[in-house]
Image (cartoon, rainbow, N blue to C red):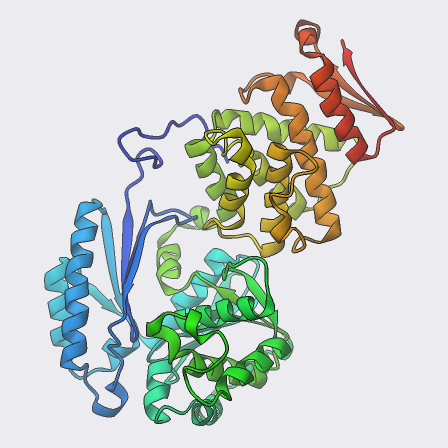
Length: 511
């Protein structure tokens, strides 16, 4: 956890981690070609650049066996621009991956040769089993605790695999991509659902799920998740780790599949034009998979083959790093006045809990550590907006390894740290954490408000201060040489904290 502490951001790297060398993945899919450049190759990946071009390379491959000339030309033109971006961003390593449409096409070799000539890097054409494997690793990278079945829906194929304790098995590929289904069903989402049922008969993989979880990956399914959030009034518009009951999602998919026109389903106008006609086919696939496997819920993953491929290249020690803590450490280095103060804050909050006889779960301890790392990321903003801006960074940031309840918890802690116990900055997402986590967020946030007036966000003070608890009495104990820290402001903050923590009286004592 000390990997980044004490390391100053490189002033020549535009606010990036010192020494970070960008890594990129060019993902050539059946529906789109996408380049993602990450700040560095690490356990927690931070995108520097992310752009796609909807080239529909998979259109017609099932019928003609070839990549269409017009679509190839469009893809190569986009790849030329992506090659320029990679050079301008001084990317250290570029990985070029191609999936279903390319591997199934008779003219794949000439297309691959053209891509390699443009990019200056070899193209790796993934088999269906490899695609399923890397998709599963993408879920492991972003949702480490996930166990269940993973499905990666692309334009040309659907890959399924099983994850148990961080390892995947039984990777299988099916000709159930949304573009292929649209072609095979003559544009009928209802007919597409029947095709899905027929082709899923070829596997027993989902049939053994029986009440477990299904992880959904792919751009069309991400669009479906966003639609569901919008239609259900969900407060956090974040696809990563969005969990929906299977029954609710099946009913939602049925509404979309049953719409009279591919563009007339509710919310269609909010979907990108390149995805709009594909969403009903994605709904058909998801509904049939959920019914076939009798799943209890579906969790959407924004991390897939690209992130899984990079995760697979890490050594075992790097894979074991907590991605949420690593991401928070990076933000602390880049945005805090002193990252070392976060270490003091972790010890300070932990000492209070020990003095109070509190018992933390592993997840509670983890979220407390992360909240300490993020506690000072808003200091550059105007005082009136530090809370809201910090809450937005936490609630809507690209962190992985945290569910929506955890995001809501962190947002509430930061809101209180900056705005006090009456702050409403995190109100839109607060209900996602539940009463117990909300109460804990208020406790940690109020404790931060005791710490900062004593330290000015600088290290070295908090390790010399301790709490003592005697029944309903709370004492904040200062060493003699820091007696001058005692005053009306500190006592007021301590009284507020004591009220939240359930103590009748609180005082500052000098030893």
